[in-house]
View 1 (spheres, helix red, strand yellow):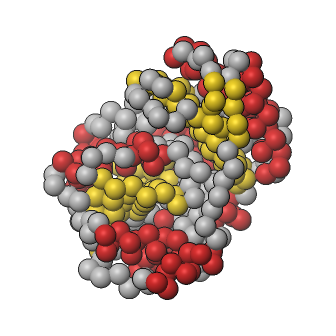
View 2 (cartoon, rainbow, N blue to C red):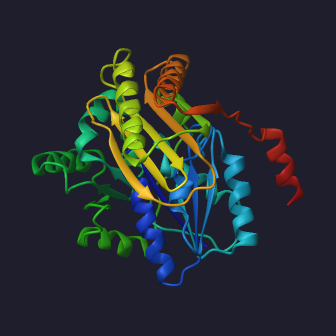
Length: 351
């Protein structure tokens, strides 16, 4: 079983990158599993990554490099016993330390285990802001990588890409640097697939760090079950866009230079709208997909720097509830239930 760890800050393009890699592996006949880790209480990306022949597991409410180590071990052991994957791709939270995750997995005693080089994805359009906002945190992510991927080169100015490359070289001169667009799947992206085929060397063990504490990120997620609504695709897209704009502007009043990720997904009978915003300066990105959905719901996942959790919770929930009422949509807030650490330990002892 080969483990591929692909890290990167919130909104850097990890999910898009992993989606394309997993499909290429599956097309090549590789049994592929994906572990998606979200810092919030719910997941949004696991469903996006689901494809025929690919098994996806979600770990929520923490970070697998520090607070969810036992959950990760149980998930890997279960995958090994039940699915027997050739490749396991791990998408940590945007605040995780990928090298620390590798160290933890090496201590789990899993059989026939190998590692691809550790990857960190970078969005050049936001890297300067991120480095200013949380310098120790970004520095650790970059230094732990064996491959540094500058993503979104199709939309970033050439001078910003060059400046980002120079900064990365200064922080980690030993890493291989690739520049590509995961969205387009260009030639440089194909080079990433070739580099992942070889074995990673790994970095010397470091003192374990708590990524949540170092990042100063607050997270909150929520699900609203929609009991009645008359939203068409245009109105649904507008609801998502206006909600993200309002949340961004209200968070800016607390932290004018925030970075992070606010993700929304709206499921209605014949379509799905997804949107996100990743910094105080970014306009919301919204996409529409035709698809059948059994559940009608609105999901939000937010992780923002230097905003108190209670303030973030109040902003996102009041904004969404206000927008739903304005659209004459009836809704119920879904209660979240999570397995406790004791329950997880019990499951571990049974296996």
